[in-house]
Every structure is written in structure tokens, then in C-alpha cells.
Amino acid sequence: MLLVLPGVFPHKDWEGAGREDRLAMLRAVSCERVSAAVSEGGLYIEMVREARAQFPEAEIHVICGRDAAERLVGWHAGDPSFFEDLRREFRMLVAARQGAWEPDERVAEVVEVLDAGGCWDEVSSTAVREAIAAGGDWRRLVPEVLHGAVSRVYGAD
Image (cartoon, rainbow, N blue to C red; front, side):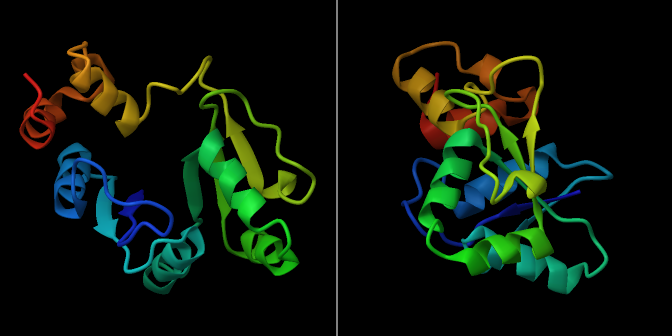
């Protein structure tokens, strides 16, 4: 499995940890079957195409939350070619965040809604930053191997 970090964010700025800090954290949770990389692009399709160039036979999935999936589909609502590209090039795995998502007919065949027996709201760097700012228990939201990095980057503890 390859976890790819966008090289740039097309719709927002980096918050808290910069690209190098985030890559270091991804690498810290990597193991024998999981690696981390940085894409040149920032749009999902750009990241997928870069991965496809390196791994032409790979099955590619984009994992995101409901909020990101809705933005993606809404942003491309008037562009039918986007949905054809999506069908040809990757599948989306969508986690319920801030509510469940029912994909519309344009994307239903290429979307799998992840069901982990609950809500994924706490699987969020925003939730970690908010917990730190409030002086709350952020450690339960982050793998133990990342506690030192998160403390350093976000000034926790």
C-alpha cells in the first residue's frame, strides 16, 4: 500500500504540520507493506496519474472522508468527463465523517462507503489540532509512534 501526500493543496493552505512533517509522520507509521510518498500534484486525479505512472498494474483507491467526497463530486458536477475519468482510473473509499454519505448515481459504481461500525469523525488532523488547542486528550486520536512528532509540531504538552 502506498500512502500519497499531496504536493500542494488545491483548495486550502497547510495547517499546523508542513509537508515534510506530514511525510515524516506517514513514514513513521509505515511498515513492510505500507510506504509513503509525496505527489507533485494536489488534485486526486493528478495524484492517481502519478501513482499509475510508477505502478501501472496497481489497483488505485482514493481514501477520503464524506466531507471531501461531497466537495469533489459537487465541484465536478457540471463536468461529465470527470466522472468517466473517475470510473476509468480509481475507486473512492469514503469514510463517514460528520454524517454518512449516499453517493449519487454518477459515482455509486466507483465508491465504496467504509463501514467500521461507527463514525470516523475523530480520524482527522483537525480533531487532533482542536483537542490540543483545548488542552484535551489528543493522544487517543494519534498512533503512539507519532506522539513525539505531534507534540513537537503542534506544541502539545
